[in-house]
Image (cartoon, rainbow, N blue to C red; front, side, top):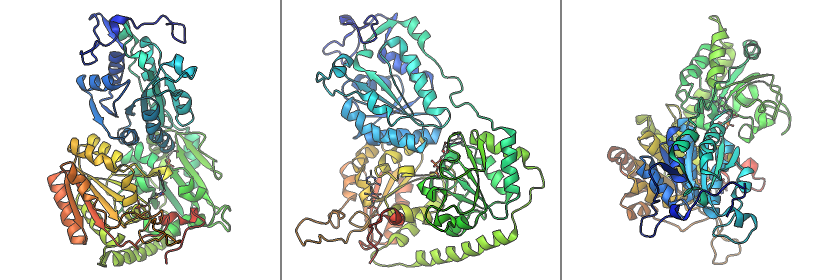
Length: 596
Ligand code: ADP
Ligand code: TZD
């Protein structure tokens, strides 16, 4: 049968797997096949880890990848494998690769691919796919789906490879698309028929591409840099906002130098926390609601003016109505030339990669940069001191049962003592309170729900963080959030990863005390089984489970988890009345119930 593109078919009966051969392909040494070319292309480009879930038609690919020396981390659900790949991409600046089966496996991975694109994380989703001739005629193949068409809508780019000699190009294009410019998620469709195709080994070797400079530096125009500096120099109340693009860029020393040499107060977005230690004297985090409306010039470094920054307008920014401009002028450093003006006017866009832009700003800063007016710095310091004192007061309380503050006070201490540990965080209240209470000290140590506020990243991010860093991971999870990926505790145990999961368990979504208003026997849609013993889930697979009802129990369990490096799940029972609907974004939920 000729394939759709009319090329001669490469598969012959001699190439098909023999029964009982473990799927091995019998081929002469001077030939190579699709399996091998995929492996060679990935290895050639430095891909050393694959996150995935096996099945037809990629089972053998997973085996052969492992045999070829790549690390293959096999999950219980593709969405978690996909999230793992995406955060590995964020941490390493190398695309994280997720491998899935066709249709349903592919779709399970798609949430993660779309999330990667939304968050600007480089990732490649590789899915096997069914027979194109049957799929395109909708004749009902096993796991039939036009995956390329589905992926295109949610990926930065999507490619399909039909011929073994094009595998090198397909992998190269996927890598370049994922990494260059604004990073994102790329889909690579590999039909089942591709794998056993054979070609001459020499031709195969020649067809591979080692991508040269996949994320080329993009040097900003000197006049754009000067325009930005002029605007900042004239500011009376300047502010810098660091986003996760700044964390991704790995220009940590220059970013810190820019903040410190200008003396400008800064706010880190949640995944930029730790780029400078949260205890840095220029951090304005504890005065956020003061600095946003008061600042006159704001420099965004790798942060978009999306919903997380109230679109740059409205009351958050001192505007008189929800859509009104607050009067601020903006400098925006971003690799995407289209980002500027997407919400409000950007007076000084600086387009380029953050490393090059920040270094250019430093180069043109001069030696006598004027520090911001003392009035501005003093006003911020005053609020910060007041708000920090208020928070410490809440943290010092020891209510029974525990609440978010008393439990997170323990996590705060543990992270302070273990600044290299990676903190993964999801939930609503569990997210918002952790973000504000737990200080971060080093770059890229805080991984969370990101731009979509998506639940389900928890265990996937934790597994990738442990695999990539080789170090300790602490996952602070709402009980609802944990449920989205909870089965992966088996994966954590199987690979014996140093992950300590802390579930802030209040028996439900947001809180656990809601009742069915009809008085019927069904529970409210927002609550779970009361007194659930999540820790037993970890015990079921050989890890350590702990039920913690007091801060002391939580502290002991976390210290022991870090000391032993064993997979640990701590079920931290907190007051089921703690928490508000939608956490701190209740304003986006117009019908949210107020805390009684
Ligand atoms: P946050 O959620 O932390 O505010 P966003 O995800 O909204 O951050 O913004 C990240 C921004 O960083 C995106 O607009 C993206 O284009 C940009 N970005 C990502 N990597 C780089 C880089 N290396 N150089 C410049 N900009 C980058
Ligand atoms: N589904 C997905 C994929 N993402 C979401 N963000 C939601 C649903 C809605 N949602 C939130 O935004 S937070 C949350 C859900 C279901 C869970 C909140 O409960 P929790 O945390 O137990 O995880 P808290 O501490 O009780 O608030």
